[in-house]
Amino acid sequence: MSEPDFDHALRAVAQRLHDELCLAAVSIKVTDNSGNTTQASFGEDDALQLACPRVGVPLQVMRRGPAPTEQKRGAPGRWVRIVPPYSQADRGTPGMERLQVVPAVVSEKRVGDLLLVRGAEAPRFTMADDRLLSAVATQLGIAVERVWLQREATEAEILRRTDELKTALLNAVSHDLRTPLASIIASAGSLRQHDVAWSEEERQEFAEAIEEEALRLNQIVGNLLDLSRMEGGTLKPEKGWYDLGALVDNVLGRLKALTSRHRIVANIPEDLPPVLLDYVEIDQVLSNLIENAIKYTAPGTEIQISARRDAGEVRVEVEDRGPGIPASALAHIFEPFYRASGQGPRPRGTGLGLAVAKGLVEAHGGRIWADNCPKGGSRFIFTLPLAESADASSSPRG
Ligand code: ATP
Ligand code: MG
Image (cartoon, rainbow, N blue to C red):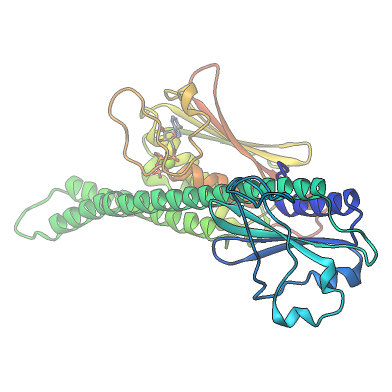
């Protein structure tokens, strides 16, 4: 009964009892708190018919005291008397006298039954059989209770995590979305103020702030949508053949407002084969990695984006010359809402970028991980399978 697969365990117990007690059939029925029944049976078909689930079978169950003897009636204690079913309807069914029932009871509650069908000519159960069956029923009760407790614990854990995610999402929406919005509203309001003579340079700054904050908003909303699709299990990449070099150029072009203060070096070999991917999703993965490299490193430092073919996959790397990732955080940075705490003020963020990148890469059958470079700075690597694309005859898009 300590087997992890409960249904399998029930069947094994049924089979064992069938063999040990030379029974025609054994059926074990277990009912959980919500009234759901699990039944595992073993034995001859016609005998099993007798042990089919039936309602309204009153049973005489005694739980406390020693078993009764010829001389003395039973007193309270731990024992179970095996009784035949007593329902009116069953009395007329042929063979019913062969069926005997041992209830499994836990904390005064009947959680299941052992339904035993003896052979037509088999002798009655002995006292030793009774004791064995009583012990089995007790074990069964304990096992059922354990399975219930485990289920309850799992459900509680799922609820707790859903709750945590909800709180984190609400925090993200209320804080992380409002900050860029407030900034956009303020900059746009300033630009509209005709009574102030803004210089061309100041106008440019407002416009840049609006663009930067809008990009930030776009990124957060994209991440939130992807996360909800991942949680809901509806993330299905719509793949096509694309040229990775063109995709990287496209992302860098779109993020120009953010990358202008860093030295970006892209190194994508010309002869890289086209890769089967969902353009929007891999765009999001690269954007999240590049956005981090910009956010967590000092202006003026270099960010390298490279790709190469490696056995049956293509390997894309984003490497920076920033502070790197603390060793203790390396195992957690891909979890939703996780943010590593470093020295000094932390750039703003939601802790979603890497969780989303991981979900998207894995949906493509790839892997993603991070490490720190010996020269300093961190390196993020993801792979995409190339096997299918290697023998592609179609030409790349994008
Ligand atoms: P979001 O991406 O949602 O705006 P975020 O950047 O904090 O927020 P992630 O992109 O998931 O969230 O990154 C998780 C954490 O990993 C970051 O908070 C940061 O501590 C660490 N991290 C990520 N990229 C780098 C990097 N290039 N250098 C140093 N630390 C990094
Ligand atoms: Mg990020």
